[in-house]
Image 1: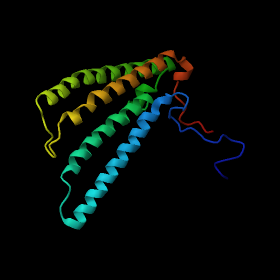
Image 2 (image 1 turned 180 degrees about the vertical axis):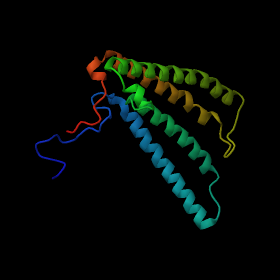
Image 3 (image 1 turned 60 degrees about the vertical axis):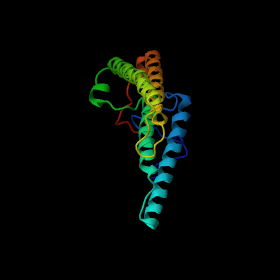
Length: 187
């Protein structure tokens, strides 16, 4: 028997996945940034492999740019995960117990993430300022270091905003909305 039937819904939601209605519409920013960063990483790595294969040497700048892009990718993906409420948590505690308890733990998690990344955003501004004022340059290609470090407070502030948005959505939701989807339910 086929898993898709004409009478059934066109798409089935994965168990435990956030419903499209529950996530913010503005996640296109993170999704497109992820695509762009992944494409840049793939192109840089592929170009370096080709150069290394044909010339037995590599581009000096590829490692430095790749490390920066991987860090940016982790922060961008972290922002999307927080906005979609799919960040790391211990499911036994987060989804065990009553719906009220799950809602409160979700709100606590969002508040904690907002606090942590808010502190990182504020403190990393000083790092950017020091890189700029002392004229620090990157070790690989010698560009100003603040070109790389400026993105830490920006992406940390984005994660903070996403966590605050999640906290607000969770606080406005009813207890039935906050209840986790049953894992064993068959559509």
